[in-house]
Length: 97
Image 1 (tube, rainbow, N blue to C red):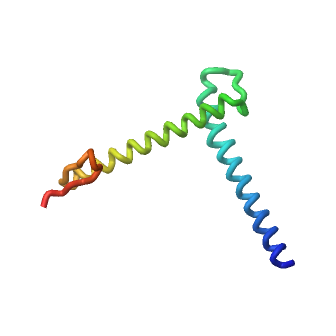
Image 2 (cartoon, rainbow, N blue to C red):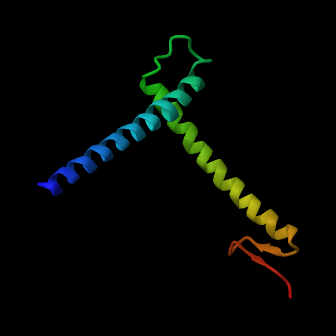
């Protein structure tokens, strides 16, 4: 009986956290960003529409790709600043000894 009560409490907590996470992810990150992208192009844009979600999703995918490119650039720059040479084929920093 006590185990069932604890299980129900944890289930309720996880449902609550999942709901908050999905609402924040969907509403704010996808729809919010998509709305701000689509709004200058159309005054009749539906904030809950499919175009808004796709625009928001495309934006975040693009930001992820840009972040990966910037990270790679920073790694190469760190290597060169420390006096090494960067091997682009193996993606490693080579220091001359």
